[in-house]
Image (cartoon, rainbow, N blue to C red; front, side, top):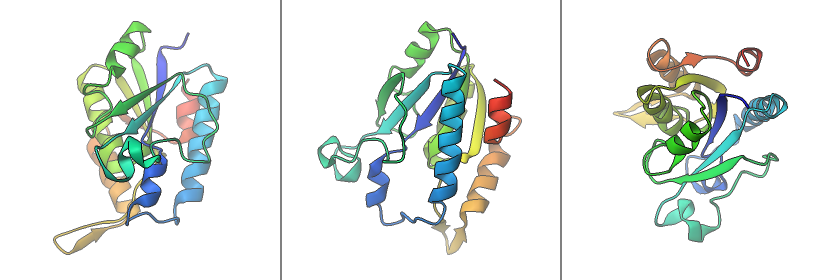
Length: 179
């Protein structure tokens, strides 16, 4: 059994119902994510799905949108629900990973700079070796104090703050080659 797991974070239908949702980067994201998942499955790396759940709105269980995006076809090894930005707090994920002697994580999903990055930081702090596959993450432009950061700028910022501190930044091909 692999000592590596792929964490698929928040790739859920809830995002289709947010005002910032846009289709522009979806085809590239889907292709990268599907390639990464398929490559991991072929190498017997378990895929862990994590879904964000809120009390109301499109991220609530009552909404019916807390389920995988339609393009996903894999069968996860396990599914966890989270209520904060990282996938570890009060989810049981850390226990599940340690029971299986998993010490390396590959991270993909939605949103690059939010739940994916936060999970990478917490995973590193918990002692996991982290590979962050930013081409298999998705985000949307963000504006603060009148300055808008593009998807590419947000991705670059996330890679910059994670690299050499919390995670190795790799492409899908590089992540799969290292397995």
